[in-house]
Image 1 (spheres, helix red, strand yellow):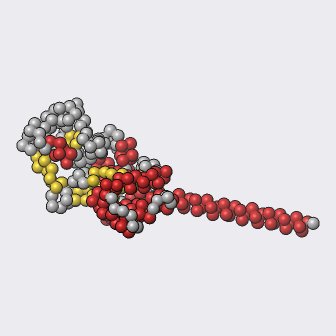
Image 2 (image 1 turned 135 degrees about the horizontal axis):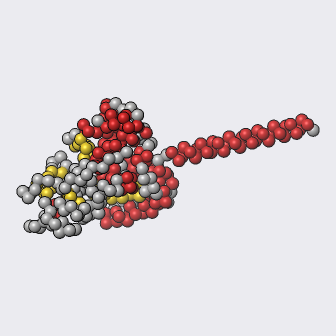
Image 3 (image 1 turned 180 degrees about the horizontal axis):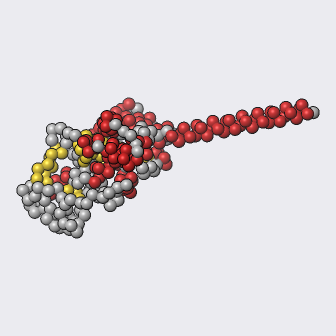
Length: 312
């Protein structure tokens, strides 16, 4: 009798331990699943999509951001691969079908415009996370803190760019303020990786936020820099690079390429918001794909200089 009770107790304890172990393993699996990129979850869990949709989505994820012409070519390839009729006028519908399935996972394919040349891009955007921690799977905590300081430099500038020299000097600031050590060689590697991953652009030693960076980090940018971030008064997109209205009472800002289109046929350019005189800057796309600017004789300034805030 006692033996039986002992066995039952041992058996019960064993089952309890077994159940606890299974629960722990399940929790572990759940934790690991939570750490996986929501991008991959969007592809795996959106089972109602066709193979053509999945191929399209996977390619957007892999590249980070694609130009509109590349997206059209991708759509054509996906349709041809899975014997689907190619109807370019239905590209928007095709993308909306994907958004319908990934939307419940707070994901969405969005269109944005490059501040470099006005070219339209498509990118898969995480609508839930509003911090740069969304990059945590690819970058260390120290690298992310460094990236935040890079964003400070870019946003605080009137030109929307930061020099590579100023960026490398942030390593000293990082150590002084947060006691985080990062060698300048390591900082160079971080910037190189972020350019490769299309979070940043680099041109002739100047670093700027890419169209993917602006699209994906829009919630963070508008929340963290709410007093500094402005939207283009013509296209309503974030404008880091652009012209400011000369009037102190007006906060209008335009992308260079938007201003170029808007003022192209106007003899006397005026601010579309306050009607003050506007010094038109002609923007043309150079052979290297980057914007080239020519000032009109009226002025040699890009806009009024704003006070740079102190961040902590």
